[in-house]
Image (cartoon, rainbow, N blue to C red; front, side, top):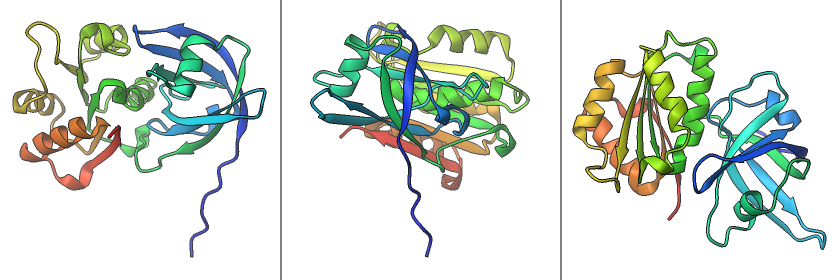
Length: 239
């Protein structure tokens, strides 16, 4: 019988904090876990109030390991969110929280895992995929990669300048953006998927992350395009 994995809590100190979109905040944390995760994995974050009350939530890691001893979380502020509200409205450099993990072995990628990579993110679901692309950029650019990114508006797209710069500079990477509420925007469709697959060729790895609705739609479109279900890995959030 396989023993369950026990994750221990680690102290983490905020080293930098800054807004990246109207609703998303970048939080850089110094923690021992910064040298022990794979791109795509997530961590649990726990806050403890002075009276002992605790609140926790899971967040995908946005950064790739870089030897700095820190990792980045991209936290979306949610109405009445206990943890996200603290990060987006109260937290400051020097504050401490607790982290445990990393969690999510099947939804993770490293360069030796190969590809080509087809990535699909809906809204903040792009965060673990961003970590994969950052890892790829560290020395695996020979692996073709395409990102299908569905978001309500360009203003809400996370790390869009970075993604557009990578698409312009790296011939092995293509960005396929679908904005659902901008004028002239649209949802992902068969044409968008076909264009992404044209750029990557048959994918060896597919990672999809977002709402249930987004992941279901993206999965159906990708399988309809001939991609084998066995190479698709998904993470979902929301009702």
